[in-house]
Image (cartoon, rainbow, N blue to C red; front, side, top):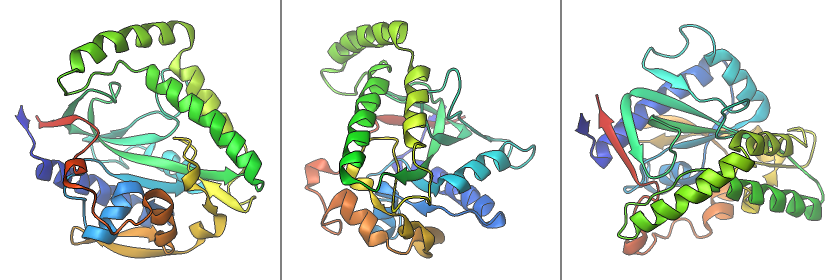
Length: 268
């Protein structure tokens, strides 16, 4: 197998994003670029030069419709499939589109075998700030627990030590607290407040309070240029980016301009 360069990796992700966008437009589903992908669209009009993944948010109602649609025969191309977001054997409470033409090797995301596009549901959040903080404190603990459930190694000089220590955490946690049980609790917490029924909305999957925004942010959308193509984003993308990155137009120091996913992508 041939290992892809970073740019080839990004081009493969762009094809996945285009397929996802096609399905959403055909069925009138809302979504927005998010996280580093949204930052890349605004600051670079494409991928952040050192980024190797892609992320989108979908309001929960649209997310559930999307999962139902892609479950239909012939909706996704033959080389694409998706991961489970609930039930036995689940690793995350969100879904990933997978391109089986591109096997993946990595020190984390061990359950994912192929290049992926992350699709996160956006749910409601409590109107009370104190309730939101308490909910996210609990969710943050669950996120940490799901991380412990993976057998991590890192592509660094100390990777072997992390590999050995990580194995025992992985073994013990999976024996006594299966990851699928934690993900079930995360799903229950995320869906505690129905999207659109509260003043606030958030992606709960990582327990980051900075993601709180007024629900109305997810009512209006625009198109942003990304690698010469057009993708959807919430009109008030400035608020999402400021919440996540602060002064987002400022480039990070050179030493921080690297991916944190430790991924190696190959082509069959």
